[in-house]
Length: 335
Length: 194
Image (cartoon, rainbow over all chains, first blue to last red; front, side, top):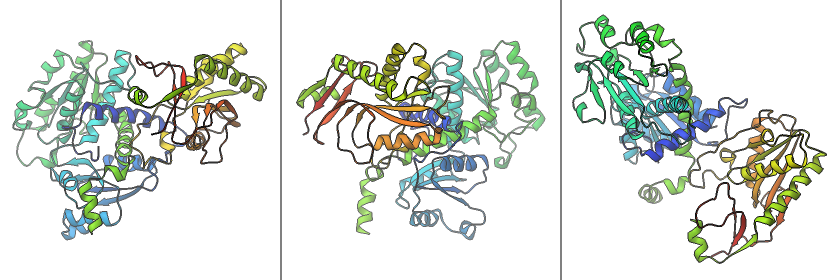
């Protein structure tokens, strides 16, 4: 692995390796000295063209726990607002000696562009691009699910996959990069995924995705699930009417108190409720559900740091001279 | 990979099962002697082969001193993240670090590894220990010391001193982790260099 751009082409071996490494990294968070010297002297740039709190802080904490130097770059208030292109920004960072670039961009495919060109010879980690992918979020969700699933099955979580786990992802699938990344990764790990959303919030071509699709949340719950993932209704990306009113949305596709009781009534005592955050309480998830013992929202945030440490470590620790493509190396020499 | 190379590279067995067992029995008694008993003793094995050796040593110590429990004395210490060659080697996934419940503060920690060579693994282990607590004493026990040190590090307890050429490879096969069909286990082998 040189870059982490998407979960669609992440192999089972690589996915399990990231999760296993994250398992070891999480032990560091419980120690008195929460720091490892593994990436000492490496520079990680957080390149954020879009607002984000938890992802950026999570990456920053992960890089710092591995002793890397962190440079935070937010497009607002930078040269980007003066019209600087992605290429020039990337080349500027390359000239400053960045070893890894964590990029969040409003344009789908921006991280791929950065990785495919010779603008910068650094490891690229996609921290969310447009409505495309958000691989580290999917990995931390899978990590949270795997811990829960192996506990339910009474097995060691290291080395395990998610075979047989039934996961429902409900909400704004159309705009959700989290849903996309999760569908591919959970499929690779062997889980059965059902997407639940109103037809207007499902993307074109969803029938070709490796998952089931349902328009009815109650039917999906009755069929039995082991993890319920609610997606945020992304008001900022909604430039058309996708549903009549927020009340109707929350009644039909929100995880409200009635559905929380339904889990108990149906005897699904081990079902967890997940949300990638930030939550719209009362819209896609009720406060009672978000704060219930089933909720893994805070565990997901905690696991996010471990998973991002694992990703940074696996991308940056290897033999950098060998990992670099020969083409870019020879072009460097001629420069 | 071991099978393939051993088919072509001339190799000789330098310690067999009985030799390893005798060496570990002696080291166990040396540890008890140096510590004047089993008081505060913690054995930390370095993955992968240091850990099964630590378990074997703990069992021998418990056999010699019935007042201690072998299981509560042993732990595993991963040193991957503290190595000085991380950026020169292919990526190594970290292994599990597990300390005894009593922790290592004010304990007598004996680091245990299979082969002592450059001493760089032990340097990494000492750094890893600092982040986990403050032992009263740290000692080092190894099954084989093959020389060629690159750092001022010395083992307190050695199973066998093995003069080697640096082109040779020393391989330790233990039944706990190397049980693959066709490979003899519980022996130490020297393979000639290419």
